[in-house]
Length: 326
Image 1 (tube, rainbow, N blue to C red):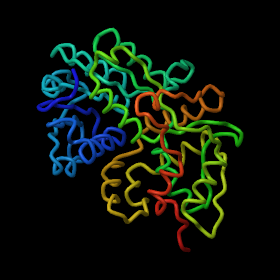
Image 2: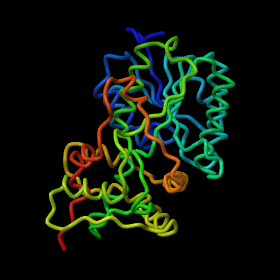
Image 3: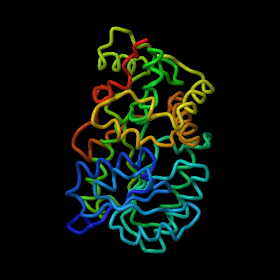
C-alpha cells in the first residue's frame, strides 16, 4: 500500500552507520512520507539524537526473535538492514521469522550488488539473507547497492595524515560508487508508489559513472582545494584491513569536520567499523578488482535522474580529508 497519513516505517540496525544515516535522512527530509519512525537497535544509547528528533527506539536482541516482533507488528514499511556483526545471517533470519510471525508486509531489504559472487564469504551472506526473505515474505523488494561513497569516510583520517587516498584496487579498476542518499530517495519512491508496483523486484543501484581510484583521488583533490597533492595509493588487503581495524572506536576523534553534522557523524560511527564491516568492505573491493561490477540505470528509472558523483560527497565532507597541519 502507498504511504499515507498514519503509516509507520521501521528501520533496522539503526545503531550502525547505514541504518543510522538512513534514519537521519528520513527524519530530516522525508518526514511527510510517514507519521511514525521506529528504529531497532542493539545499542540504543547511540540513538539519542534520533530519539530527540522524534524517532521511537526499540531495543532488540539479535538472539531473541521476540524482541523484533514488537517493532515489526507496528510497521507499514520495513527498511531492513542486516546487522554488521558476527552471526549476521543467523540474526537476520530471526528478524525475518519475526516479520512472518506478525504478518509484516512491505519489506525493503538493503543489500549489496556483489552478493551473487559466492566465492567471497562476507558479501555472499547478503544473498543468503535475500533468499530467506524471498521465501518468507511475499511483499518484499530487494535493493542492491554498489560500493557506497559514504564508506569514503573511513579514508578521511588516512588522507588527512598521509595525503594519499587508499583502496586495494589497481589503478585501472573501475567502479561506480553510489551515494546512500540517492538509494534512500529511491526507497521513499518505492514506498510512495506502493508494493503492487514493485513487489518481488530486485533493483541494483550504482553511481552515475564508472571511475577509478586515481579519478576518485583527483575528485577529492579538486573538492578540498589543497595545496598538497592527493595521490591514489593501492594498499594490500592486509594493509587495508590493519588500517580499518585501527579506526574502531576512534572514528569520532579522527573525524576533523567541525560543521553542524560533526556530532552526528560521531554517533553514526560509534563502535565502528566492526570486524564484519571491515571484511565486507575489503571483499567489495575484491569484487571490483575482478571486473564484475556493472553500472545500471535502475536508480534513474525510479528517481528520474542519475545519482550524485563522488565530487558531491567530498564537497560536503571536505574538512575530513584536509591535510593536517604538522
